[in-house]
Image (tube, rainbow, N blue to C red; front, side):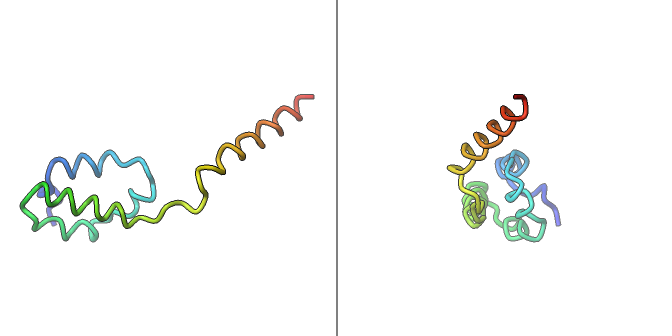
Length: 80
């Protein structure tokens, strides 16, 4: 398998992934269907479609500030 046959834009998108779920999602096996696609724009569309298949985190972003405030409260309490 030659991942270098992926369009440069696709390679950059994959290398720039920050979300660990997405990084783990894109194994070599999952990328294989993109290799025979010669059109770079179609490769990118397929990659974006695959990115859409990744499930969102179970913890919502709205919960994050509450958790942060709770931690700050505990920290403030320990310094008294």
